[in-house]
Image (cartoon, rainbow, N blue to C red; front, side):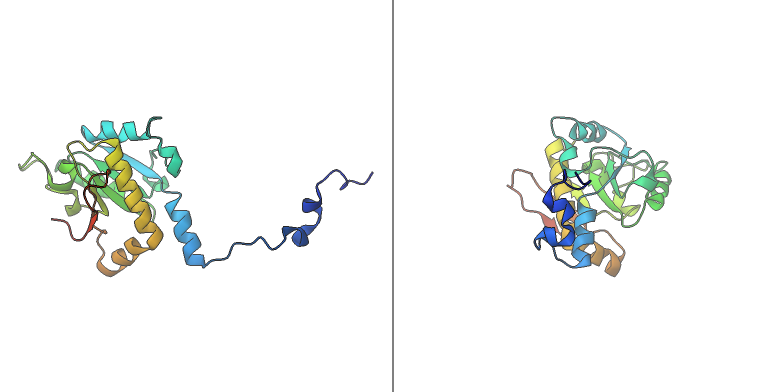
Length: 196
């Protein structure tokens, strides 16, 4: 008995056994596919929206379906920052420092009305929109937005990564994509444009 008799024919045939089962595509499409399916998020929960962000990572909503089950503790291992909650003036430099330490390409989701526009806290202590500190790619509305809204924002970001629109906009303007997501039930359309 030779050493290859117990192996299936497909393994011993080499390239001839593949029967022309190859995937073809451009390198750019493969890179976009890999980026979309391997988004690692940094945890940056600041207020009540952070509870909803944690619920999104739990078993009921299961971010693992999208390869995002682990919130990274180090910005060097993350390429998505989810800013969940209000940002104070004292926290703004820290947020920017963490953003600067993230790997390129990097994306930002502004979760909740407080992160997007300051919300009900219209005073000197709260930043009136995180887009003043970092370029925001997707805005998730609500006070607080539920896990389904955050999932909708993540899927919107995945679609923007797949089409390459985010990287084109970032290269042209230096700003984020500025996508405003609506209700995940589909009653409100997704609007692409400049914030505010």
